[in-house]
Structure formats: C-alpha cells, structure tokens
Length: 146
Image (cartoon, rainbow, N blue to C red):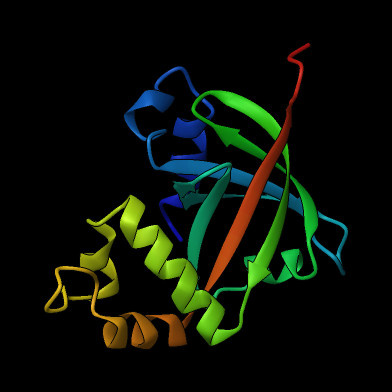
C-alpha cells in the first residue's frame, strides 16, 4: 500500500504520537524468504495483548501462523513480542466482539450495527469475521536502545 512507508516513517519518528494511540509497526521474518519485513498496523488493546484485524486476502500475517517472535514499535518504544494468528471464523468473531468493546468506533469500519441490546449485532460480527483474521500480539520485553 502506498501509505505504508509514510506510516512506518511516522511511527519511528519523534512525531509518532500523532498515530501511536492506534497504530504500531510489526517486524517479522518471512518463513520462506528469511527476509525481515516491517508493516504498520492498527491495533486495539485487549488486556495484556494487542489485537490487529487483517483481511484474509493480505499476505503478511501468514508468516505468523503457529506463533512467531516479532518486534513491535508501540507508542515510541520497541518491544519484543510473540504474535499468533486466529483464523477460525467463530474464534475471529469472538475476538472481534472483544475488540469492539475496547474500540466501539471500529464497528463502522467493520460495518457492524448495534443490536437491540446496544451491543454489536452478532450476525454482522460473524459476517465481518468471514473475510478477516485476528493477529494477537503479546509484548514480552522492551528492547534496549543502544
């Protein structure tokens, strides 16, 4: 995407505060190529984890299947982390419900309307889950800046 280099630069700059509340970068190693990649992603905190939603058609998250060590740039800090992908539709829907509790504004992006009880409509959530995966990232330790 054309804006990824711009976002990566911003996240790693002193101006990161403009986007750091909901954008981080994930650095990982390609499983087949061995190349190191860095992608900017949106995130929503969920306890001690960070949830990222990706379209299934994207390829970056496939390198994290089965769990993978990553480095994240989060709010101006570089952290070692582990990341895993949730692909099962019902598990993605459950994670989307948790994500929407923490970030109700995300419902608009997912095209999820409120149900009669004011909570996200579960049918809409299941529909949104169909074309998406969730990446759960768990920060482990801060990287020392040399």
